[in-house]
Image (cartoon, rainbow, N blue to C red):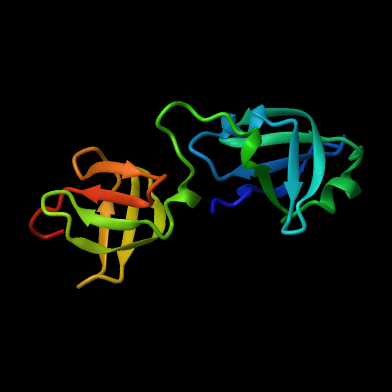
Length: 165
């Protein structure tokens, strides 16, 4: 069953003197975080209303309802922010990385199970899937040349295996 709340970023510091905070986004783009009117804080998932949000140098500057000064914003430092899955609007064919973790990874040619996806590394060029539990551990670039199919609903990924992978 998919998680209801998904991690989307971390409050790293304050911004200015009016209670704004800087958020390091954990999404494909920082703009993704700007669409939400409510975020949820830490594992308790207590809701906090977003008054405004904007992107600044690959970070998101957010103003939360009730935070009006630097001490209040400092209290948010290191807080992990979550979204409710039902509030997210994803483009057609897009999915959450959290939904891939634990997916079975199969060879696209013969259906042989290579292992399970245990982690996704977010590297500058592209994401890399970490696959463990098979004959050997693998790291597979998440690019069309290697990823033949991603089926989140059925919990598997088909990959094109090349020599040396």
